[in-house]
Image (cartoon, rainbow, N blue to C red; front, side, top):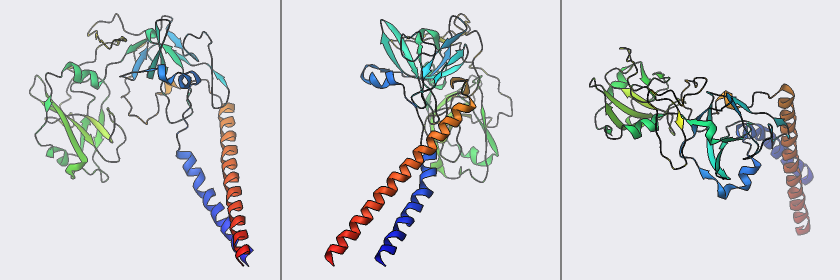
Length: 332
């Protein structure tokens, strides 16, 4: 009778593991590192900005397995495959840190929430891409803390989120629906404000709801709104266009080339908005030559891994149950 109870307990626990393991593993981040990066963590210099645009002398760059390498392929730590990561000029890439090799600065690409192979790119082959932080830095003397009311947001069906006031970049049209909780003042956080030359007031806001896009970091949705034309019904034209990309400098100095095309890329960069952390890198930064066989290989590997975890857990549970049974037997 006691043996039957132990068997029942074993199967209940095993079934629980079978039900919980797939969703837990599926939601986990499969982020693949770079061997050189892990071995030289203490020598890396963290970048203060992440978004760059490719600007190689040959019209493209090839990411390397490690700084200084001339090898055209990178070995994946995940499946052992050799892949070539070739990026055309104008491609937006996300960089994490730099490593100094013989006076040259090499940057390592950021990883995302999927199997993604990071590589190393010479920082001289990249240009800095203007974003909302650069706008705030350049106009810091014109920005002020907002102390007014944003009750207008509760009376509209939609409003426009700008990357910065008068930006010429992509904008997000935020549609207010039953899932929006804009009546709750705590759901909207205001930041700095800006007054343009036409006396239109702009406010930077963060909305804490289920919306998942924005132009900043943290929260649910972030961006600038024009309080005098929330939905951009007046078709506000870009009056603060982004300057052309410019060279990165190790000392942190920035010289944006407003109206100067001398540092522009061969191909114009994508106009897609800057993703928030946790979102995937742009498709162009993902190795383009991943094949169906590679995907199948990864799937099989994942299945074997899940089966191994479940088998190990089952063995541990069985041993524990046997030990409990023996302990009870000795007492009787």
